[in-house]
Image 1 (cartoon, rainbow, N blue to C red):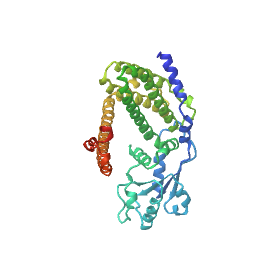
Image 2: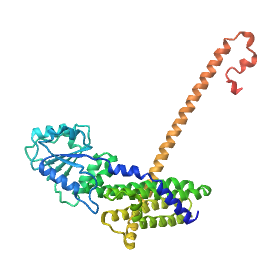
Image 3: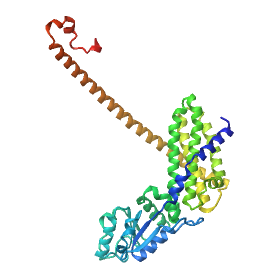
Image 4: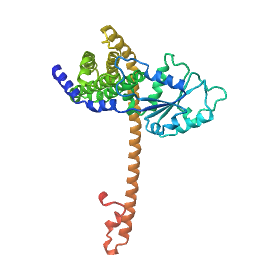
Length: 388
């Protein structure tokens, strides 16, 4: 297939992406309610909205702050929340009434995250934290620490349903960075896993010719979806064509680089699988980081910086490649053992059925009148009809 034909298929593939579903996911209503001490609520508000703001948060405010003493007056808001944040000021501690209120809110059928702020333990004489809430708590002694925002938002995403992660990043500045990291890593691993699966048919020359092109189209489609999700996460306008066009140099460069790299390793036999998996991971990683930089800071990554990113991806690609292959081997071995066990059970069942059939045949023949029992029947009484 010519390069122009391959590029034509690429753009046809990009047009098939269901951008409407992704856009709806990003713009869906989101309601996170934080309940706690006033100082702790102010800290939560800071952590949630601290981050790059090239594009302002899109949509209505998604974080509602309720004082611990006033929360009981708004049961509808609590029950309608997509997630609850229980914010506790460790310096103030909890009264028995506060602890009971937190315990009651933690029992609501909503995911909840308890955040202990301004210290690592409650003030002396404080009532203890509810055991169920403490099991999924995060401690942030200093909200100005370098990793404070990341610790808070990563734990928040763990509690928030995955279907709401993109909407949370679009509306809360503090969530954007951790969402971008997870998205890039997840898409890179997805493409690496797909590259492993597609590498096996490529060992057969007849299958490898069309499959390699399909492989490139699938990997690039996944990258385009990743880029669009990054754009929406950072609050960019949702026009898909504009978002792809503005980072087209990144996608195009990664496409050509990956195509050349795959051609080179394609000359190798089975040992070429590891490089192919690594290239799929590294190419997706480099594309994701470049797009991330663009939407976060408005920077088109210069060539030297792109080389650095590519080198960074190369340093981890072999580890990721072998990790994916090891997982596949483990799965294959487990599947093979299950198949063998099932086959053994089927064989055993077949033996029991055959034994039962022989016993039934004997009983039937023994009940026949003597004149119908020929010597041949007597000699073959232990054999099934198909064995005769």
